[in-house]
Length: 251
Image (cartoon, rainbow, N blue to C red):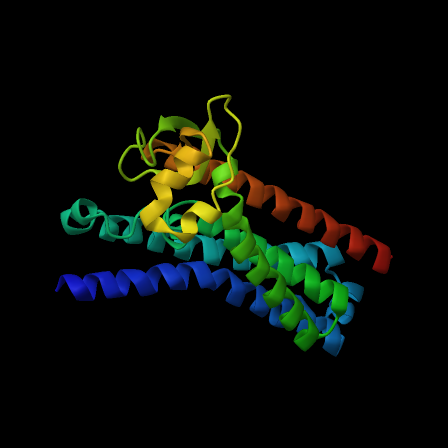
């Protein structure tokens, strides 16, 4: 039973993480790109609907549906991960970026970013297939790149001692740096080539200890909020760029 639970949790986290790429592709191809290509958008603009209202209504309706849907899935996913079997075994650690992304407000924020990115690509390129490819590729890069920034969005804790000493269980380790008696970093690349002689190599280099930067589990909420804020700023910037583009192209 537990293996099935873990299996479906894994696929759910992948789905929630990959969904923004699909949303960006759909938004670029169908939300704005197709109507630009067919000319139906220009026809609507000559009637009673202004260009900005046209894109705002599309964005608001699609965004509302997406955020409402994923706002139900994310709490269910978090609840499913909270069973004693997983928390006691340490399975699906919160520091795994896929789990982190699927476990909080980052997911709905990513969907809004994907929707705005796709809509902007459709307005810019005016071709559904081109907008699909560009928006999907750009969103894939964002989904892969943003997690690299997560550990640096909130001040990390420091621990000094032996490797891993002073770091609480379940912490997100950001970096581990060997230091000498003067506190200067010591390169340890060649010492890692021979694990049996690692201690002798470290002593020969004058290593006094290891400084570890880490995030304890209590940093999960501020890290989520910081990444969500960053994503919403990017979304607002893209929305502003889309409105500027419409203003230049339409009277």
